[in-house]
Length: 117
Image (cartoon, rainbow, N blue to C red; front, side, top):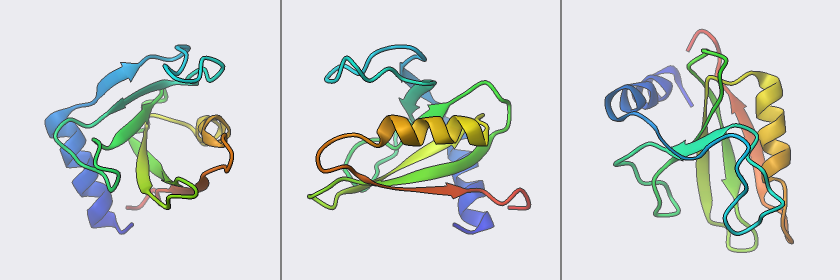
């Protein structure tokens, strides 16, 4: 993503906020062995390629929008972004491990924001 796209997402987050659906430490509703490593929610009034609101993982690092994880479900090929807010790189790695489940596993790609963007 270019600098303008990152700023657009920041504006949306500032304007609409983030609704936390599942707090840190809560189990996934369908997969009780999956425990959320940080807060998880969505940006209200947005729509991702999967038809659902755009998902957000939120930490406590006070770093702002630092990146996203591009997740593509297999075998359907449906893609969805997972925005990363107030997270460290170590937090992002933990989220990648959290999402890397299933048979077949999803394709995951971490896009870390350039600090100058």
